[in-house]
Image (cartoon, rainbow, N blue to C red):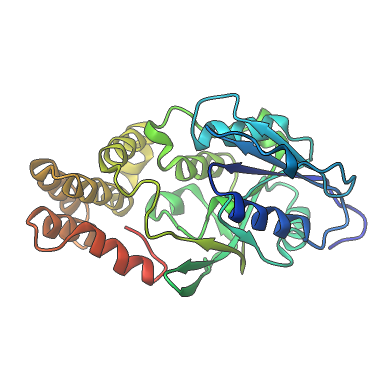
Length: 307
């Protein structure tokens, strides 16, 4: 940490029905070894706020508010951003935990690159008793690179952003995405349009993947949201492998939802853009009932990966 500059930080923690994990997340944030004030803004979405979490500690205050915008994760994050007072804004999901050194290392990275607006870091993925490190082997991430690859190492709980970029720059989290699915990826694409993203090659966040994801049974929403994403970003046409990746995810979602014709149609589109895209073949296997979608996801999650 440089001694001459320590910007204040607000951490937005959206939450819904995870009281014990939420307290762990808050404790890890407040325990960061960082000299400037870090205030935590806990945003309750479609649930009753727990006022007992609030704290007026001048160095590590905690505020508890309700989502005053669109119901869902995007609206909750935006409610927190608009309530934030720090020069920098960070996100942390209520079931994740920051590891020691996160804030200090990320702030140093931003200070070393004054033109940067956004910095991420690596993650540790915890699933079903196993923990895998996921670290992106890049210091800078361009829009073209993000179109080619979602880079799931860039997890929302790692994001640290200049508040000015959120309020007066590339903007808040998009609340129009169907079901708020993939809103973090759209947010990354929009941020990278503004300026390349900085990244630290160290895992500073423990990310918990659950056997029963919030989206596990919402395949129709996933397919609709990803089609919305392709329409919103025509730049995918310039990156065939990236377009095939998203199309393959749509094919898989259609297959998992039982829409065989839709799955086959999107699988064909995927293979036309990239014959090596594995998601197309997984979608066809699910559509033919050769394998169950939950078995595919379970296998991938054990390796710290998703579809």
